[in-house]
Amino acid sequence: MPAETRLFLCRSDNYGVLLHDPDSGATASIDAPEAAPIEAALKATGWKLTDILVTHHHADHTDGIIPLKEKYKCRVVAPAAEASKIPAVDETVREGDKVNIGSLSTNVIETPGHTLGHIAYWFHADKLAFVGDTLFSIGCGRVIEGTPEQMWHSLVKLRELPEDTEIYCGHEYTAANIKFARTIEPNNKALAAREAQAKQELARSEPTIPVTIGEEKKANPFLRADISDVAAGIGMAGRAAAEVFAEIRARKNKF
Ligand code: ZN
Ligand code: FE
Image (cartoon, rainbow, N blue to C red; front, side, top):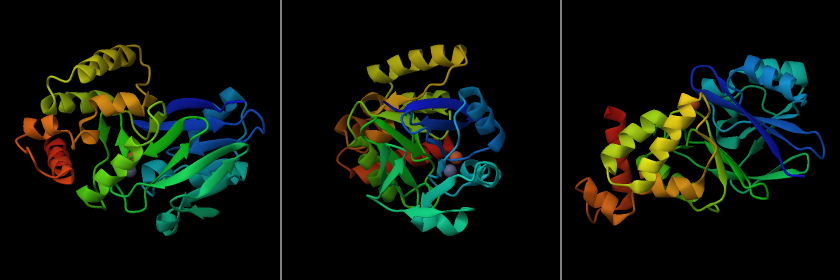
């Protein structure tokens, strides 16, 4: 049977998400921003937590690990390069490693930039990817530990996933991201359509994710730094994609 998901807000703007395998009953929490809303989601679904899949070491993705581990004795899977900064890790993973959640299978994709050890989890058979703070809808994470060039290459890796892959990201930042993206590509029709759609979703207090990679490729300026019109639009015609990306990211930081 296909995977089931449950998406909910944690803290102020973090997303919590549970991934459930109906065949085995296994259930993973992607990151653990905060224990209480994750426990509430488990209660509402009747699912039992078996695993936590951690994308990176920041507190707004790991604060819930210890209380959840104590209560559910779940396995904690975390990026090898950041395991020393993440509590209660049982298993470390690197690029290309496979992790099973019951009968569901995920591939680990290393996406350094936001943090140096950041990873994403791609469930190819289920067409789902959990990308943490690397890719947001119409945005991307701040480049805190890595270089803009690293972040660009990480985003290109995610961009290469099949177009119908549904993306779950770590935060609800879509409205602010769209506002900024319009300054980079004011004439992008896919972006205008995304703006109208997101406005409706937010007005109904609904999440703006998941969103497919195919949709993001058309409207997210951080995935479009190698498109000549995008570079030309910010006065960087002919420059390397990583430089164009770095400029867009720098503008977003000041926006
Ligand atoms: Zn983060
Ligand atoms: Fe975060």
